[in-house]
Image 1 (cartoon, one colour):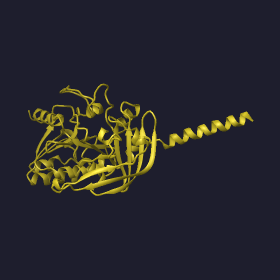
Image 2: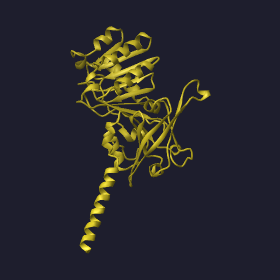
Image 3: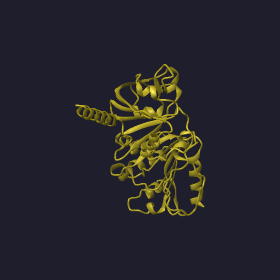
Image 4: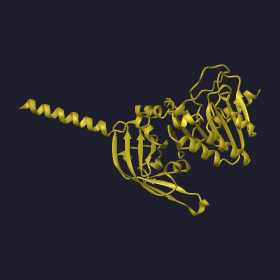
Length: 338
């Protein structure tokens, strides 16, 4: 009798553990989402403030859209304890009179164990799954899950004793060398304001291509590009349009890639855009662009059709704060021209 009771108890425990595991969000699933935005959770985002809203800006607007939507929402918290709740959020989008036609978004969330667990300093990810469905994920600061999160997103793990978002994401190195193998580590990233969002997209799929084209189309005075391989007609067409409307466009690329049959560097140069090619490093493996000296696009994504249609790549967009990318572009431009 006691043996049967014990067996049933073990079976119930096993079922309970299995259920918990199934209900816990797997961070590797993030790559299945078409678009997402992340930032550091702040006091004003948290349950400490009675408004129960997460404030948007233009970066979050581009993920959630510029009209009000009631989203079916998977709330998930990963920390010492994991919580998951399936419910709703409401994305309010309105146009304050003082904003001269510009809109403002706020994501209103419900009170649940996930949102009660979120603390300032945690990372919040809002990932869009479909037109009416999102994930609202909070990952505890300093946890193993935080390390895994950044790894899944293709970022460097947060460094110990560094507090700003970008230093924790990427680390920092001031070394430059004229002779190196491929260095896949990204540039040092700037500290960003807590209220800013970082947008991230994955391929295969059109989101990187479309958002790069949109950033080019929205630029008003300057575009600086340092990209290893450029073969994407849509992106190059947008660069040429920007050049024709008076935007200063400069392009740095790799000389071996530029000599390839599919390269569009000759087309860019023939249009009158200033181009310099790497002739001093083994390769120029950067992939970044600076729009109007303030907005950055970077990631593993080359400006190629295969990166859009076939490859597993990522791209991200965020505001530049401390001129790391601008300074690196200036250095490379002058170094390769010398």
